Image 1 (cartoon, rainbow, N blue to C red):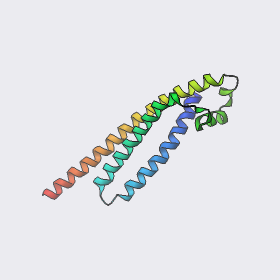
Image 2: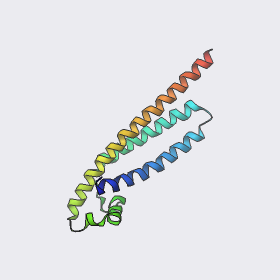
Image 3: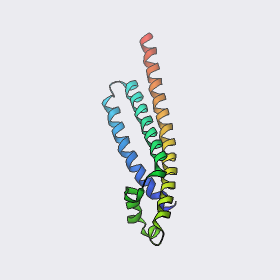
Image 4: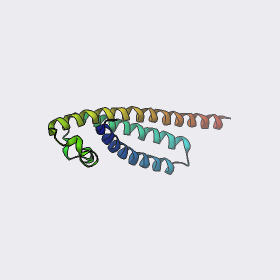
Length: 132
């Protein structure tokens, strides 16, 4: 794996881990109603996918030289940064960040669809139990 991909993946996954923890806490808080917890989790995960898509859209226009990916790149693999023009590194980092954000958004969107489908299934099972 390219060092820039490794660094951007680490930064993205750190943010996704915190978002996942927050969503899990909401779902645990709503665990008295399984259908509600799953539907809410699916919607929040879907919102996370939309935020990732918006970040991917904005990535080519952002100055990343003061962001966490640039700092991590300087700290973890300084040989990639040394001797290369900053504009070239900035452009390459923007490109890699956009690609990796889109990759993660696709996976998070599929997860949202799966969790929301489970919520719909739980709601259907509850409706059938109430009807019989």
